[in-house]
Amino acid sequence: MTPLTIDNRTARALWLNAQGLATNPTGKLDLNAMIEKLGFVQLDTIQVVSRAHHHILWSRNQNYREPMLDKLLARDRAIFEHFTHDASVIPMAFLPMWQRQFRRKKAELDRSGWMKNLPDADGRAEIRDRIAREGSLCTKDFETDTPRSGEMWSRPPHKLALDYMWYAGELATCHRVNFTKFYDLAERVFPEHLANAKMPEDEQVDWLCTAALDRLSFGTHGDIQRFWDAVGNEEAKDWVARQHNLVSVKIGTADRGMVDAFAPADIEERIARVTAPTSRLRILNPFDPVIRDRARLSRLFGFDYRVEMFVPAAKRIWGYYVFPILEGDRFVGRIEVKADRKASILRVEKLWVEPRVQWTAKRNDKLKAELDRMRRFVGVEQVEMAG
Image (cartoon, rainbow, N blue to C red):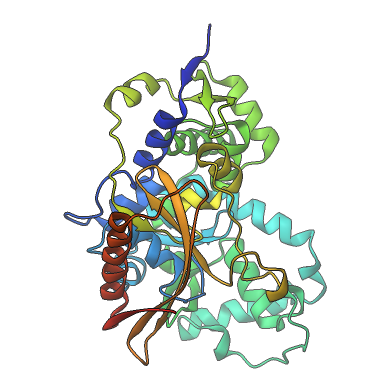
């Protein structure tokens, strides 16, 4: 069968619609439904303006405020924390399909350098028993020597044990205080009917790949694998090979090329109902789902982006924490913004305009409007432009 051709503009629109960035970020907020539509939201501790998870959600509905996510985790138990490609919040309803990921992450750690300083089974049992007796605890509640090295495997033994049991699904995040994680027994956090649901391994793989492609709208083997990073490359390839209802597609790229990919059976219906992305200008987070997969980002939008907070200052091309600027279905620039909460100022340090983009007065007004919305979101009084 001849593959279905999807031009680049349509592909961009499909992706942005699937990721909640095609419509204006207004209206009634259903936070749980938003996270379920995305699949997960990456967590990150860095707070230059607002932490990544809060910024990602606010970008999709600007009625969102930071305390809402904590309530969904700690009070409603509607989400749980675990590891996709990075630490993330995931809908609690997905827990039965996440059991293999607990096993995968434990097996990875068992093969890693963590093991040399990890407390043995008895040592871990003591920590678990203390949590059972005393209730949820954070790493500060334990006293063990902290090695001088900052490497992950040189963390204090109690921290290694807490994280090891968290990755394995024996402990769970029950709440956070100022982003400090509190660990509790998994059985006191995860609903029993979900934690005890038995799903065969192959069915979990099938669900993970199906759910990934559904949220991507189209993707290569690599796109599907990277979405959750909860299946391996060969597992993703084998899954595609077993499916008889996938549609082979050719996706137009930003450089006017074509890439072979796969799409769900209803792809033509999706194309028929897809809406052109709003012309509203958005400042996106570096860890936004649309930004995170750099290969897909470059392929679809011709936008090459890298996170530089871990790059030595002298080797940075842009800056420590630079936000991509999306307008409609096009990335038009990058901006370095910092929230100075003490001075109650949102400071714009620098703006870079993408090649072949004309920075008009109208576009500048859109940016000012977005900065003012961001100012209100983080709770500061004014925006200050450098220089």
